[in-house]
Structure formats: structure tokens, C-alpha cells
Image (spheres, rainbow, N blue to C red):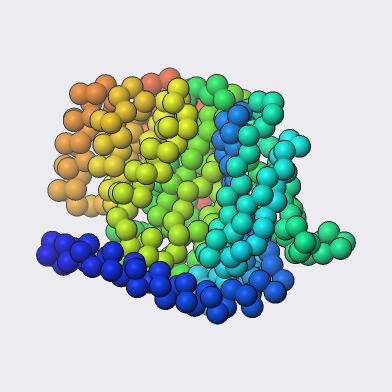
Length: 383
């Protein structure tokens, strides 16, 4: 197995060059045709500081999945998944955003991605703000029909949300798959069935996770920001955002991966890069890291603790495996990071993580009781 991994890594640069050449050739043929069609904008969740804010998104040809319903058939869900996976990106399109009076523009790349960067003249207050989006020269005369954020429950029409972060007590960086949302990543057949035939309303969160995250973010009071880092492709952004909204799990910027050769790169390398970027953007903000034992979250987070002394308050790892060897490995890491003054908690459920958070002063007794009630309510509805 190690020999195969070594061979794959050696071949990866050549595969990427070949893929990039094929991609450029294909796009040279189809992009001019796509650019003449009716386009939509899919804006992601923006984020930043009072002085610097960025908002990313994608320009696509319409292939909008049907609205998710709890009673949807697996075939209908599978059809929607295919619509997402077979997205038609459009490059070379100018996208304009307006935030607090500042107007900036960006041009979408060959994969349809654009990134708007704002530097407001006056510092923005902490909290949620709206960016107005347009495609200059392409918008319909009546101002309708061509631009949509694709953010169910977050924005409507031409508006996208951005979170400005300042003076929070701490931040939370969380994985999604098998940390927040049940995905069965430890079993490929079950994972494929869950991902390919579920939707935002049928996919299940872990019991108590919504109450725990609302407590950690102190939703509605002094807001602690949460960032979601997942290896899922950007094609599933609307599904994940709708899931968070439907399950009342606090909103935050999502960091996903580009579909294609980017997904072949190591999970650890990608996740390290994203977390390093967040820590750099907010140098005075400590963080709580949340993940699961199914992949490499414990190892990645332990390395973050080693590299950034004093920046991590706690690490919560949801135990999703039955492998005793894996559990022991995580416990060994826990002893290692404890030397740096950080608790790594291998938590069997949200209640175990909440117990540590209560003892550490991250959440209040009332918030802890809310997690207990949420877990009990879930158990009552599944028995």
C-alpha cells in the first residue's frame, strides 16, 4: 500500500499537468458558448476583519437542484446530487460587489470562481453585513432573474452575507463530515449511499451538536465566530448551507475543496493550509478545534497545537470508530498535546464535549443543560 501511495505521489504532478492541459483545451471550446448563456452567481459566506473582508463565489450556468423536502425519494436526491456534481462553470465574467459603499470587481477563472476583496474606508462593526452582487453588462433590465446567491435561508437575490470578526472571546474551527453531519466516512459503501441519496433535510446531525455549537458561539449574545473546514467539494455548498440552516446550527464561513485534481491532494495538507490562514488572519484570537477520529483530524490538530503555542484552547474529537488501535492512537496524541497545556478530548458524543466546555468555562450551566435536553430529545424521537 505504501508503495502505491509513493508511486501515486510521484505521478501526481504529471497527472495534474495533463489534466490542466485537457481542461484548458476543453474550456477554450466551451467557455465562449457558456458565456453567452443565462448565468447565475453562487455566492459563498464572506468573512474578514473590520479592515479587510473577502467574499468568494462561482459563476455558473443554471442547473439548480430542486428544493429539498423530507419525503423526497432517493432517486430525486440522487438526481439533485448529479446536478451539483455536473455543474457548468463560466470563466471570464466580471462580478461586482458593493459593501458599505465600496465597489470592487473580480473576474471569474476557468472554474467559475471569483474572489472579491474589500478594504472599507472606515472600519466595519463586528457582525453580519450584506454585499450586493451584480454582473456588469449582463443583468436583466428589470434587475431580476440572472443573479442568485444559492444560499437558502441566508440571502436572497443579489445579496450575500459576510461576517466581520472583532473582539471575540475565541473562535471555533470545525470539521463537518462525521463531526457535525453523519456521513459514515469510515465505511465507503455507507458513505456513498448517504451522500448520493440524501438531502439537506434527510441528512442527520449528531445528537446535541446544534445546541453545543449554539452554546460555543454564544449565538445572539457576544458572538464567537465559527469556521467550517471540510473536504467536500464546493459543488455541495448549497446542500451544506441548507443543512446548517434547517438544523439550526450556527452559520459561519465554509471552506470546501475544488472539484477535480485538488481533491486528490492529501486531506491533511489542505486542512493545514486553511487553518493556518484563519490563524494568520486573526492573530489575537484563540481557537477551539473540533473534528472526528475517522480521518486525520487528531493528527492535524495536534500539529496545529505544536506550531501555535497558546492559540488553541481545547481540541474535541468525536469518536466515530470502533477500532481500539485508533482510539489508543488518539489518546496518545491527547497526552502529547497536554504537555502544551491543551486538553484533547476523545468524546463519545456532544454531551461529553459539552461537559469539558462547561468545566473550562466556555459555556454556561444553562447552555450545558440545553445540550442535555437536545440529546435526550433526539433519543426520545429515535426510540
